[in-house]
Length: 217
Image 1 (cartoon, rainbow, N blue to C red):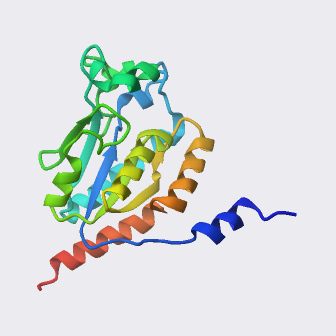
Image 2 (image 1 turned 60 degrees about the vertical axis):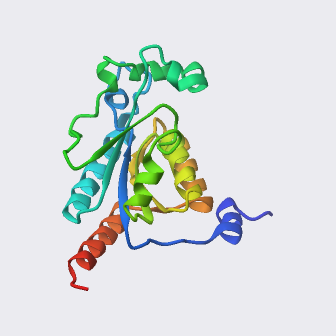
């Protein structure tokens, strides 16, 4: 009998990269579209619990004076600036200007000290100023939360790693429309691109950075 998937991956990919010294928190595309039952992007309970977790992490990040970045889909009224992505993925119409589903989810109002990154493609890095901004801030670790796990979170995760950032994906703070793609993509990201951690682990890490920042040099 062949080895099971977990054993096979453990043999090939069992490695954690760990956290760095200067993290930033990114909340990817927490929009009303995922919480509106009449919207084709409705994500149900998995998206609801992801937002609750992300908001707790966001509060901790602010308490530790970490950079907090929110992303949103910034589409032209025709969707032309999203190119083939808009052509292929019909639910992106939910993010057209003026639609309530394009607004930030209930409970997520951007704060004055947060940066909002408009994007047109799955990754928060593609075609945006996110990477140079993080570099200018001295960030070495990206904490990822958001929607959806199999789409924009995964794309952002791969690019974060590709730009050289240590990347932590918070499983509790990511959501998808179905558990299967959620779990499968967390599994794969943890194997190849990032450390997938739970909320308690990331809160402890953020607290440790707050303590380090408060300690005189």
